Image (cartoon, rainbow, N blue to C red; front, side, top):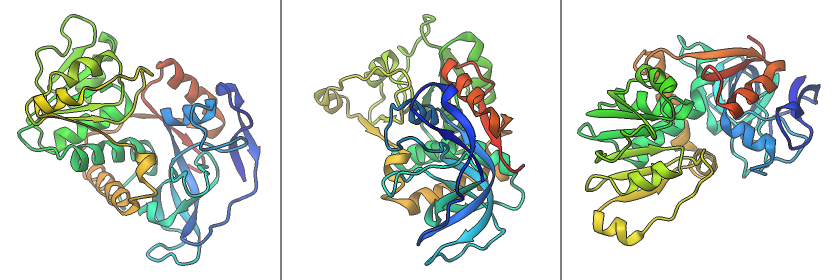
Length: 326
């Protein structure tokens, strides 16, 4: 089979299409004939060596949509030829991803059937970001209809899905924060009632949010943690800025506030049922049109390096999926 391979840690130029042995499913696994593979920021971290769950040579890609190819022992409820979506980020059980390939192996309990009306390219574009946002808001933050929600990085993939899910879940007010005026339109498309530009003087100072969804970190995290409403919940889902901060536990006590974290990769192997349920819920809501129209760019699998460059430069047109067997 053909697959995109990282032969050594480095920049996007290390991505190359090669012939690889087709994986076979082990117990509790299936293999998938991949139609589309999502490209995410986390893939660039694996490629560069920032995260070392995977050692070269390896194939990146943690979210795929396609058709069941082969079923391993002890797998029930799935059939060859069935359309499915899968997460491949269970790095604590053998350390393989493999989404940018014609065939990928997946844990069966991190696979969900595709809704009949679901475009597999949409599923690949939505899966990791949508599931992260869903669990962070519904299970971790326990979003309520009366809540004001602030979403950092709302013009990006995971922030955009968080805003859409907050809106569809009935949040009273959704406020997006973007890094530049040029990104403000994307925040509006993602369902925000209001858009603030970080560093333009508006800032987060007047806010008293009930929930903050933060994949960004840095100075905004420092400021917003101290601005939570009573019983406010601050959910950290990433640190794209690379700027970690210290949090005063006495400050949280005095403010009656909570700071918590959620890592999809960190929880998948521990709570696969929770993750699979979230996958099904997000795909179902998207198929029913409740999360708005998805916008993504489709590139050929051989153009994976281009997608990684766009992510590194924050210059791309939004979410990118690779066409493997369209």
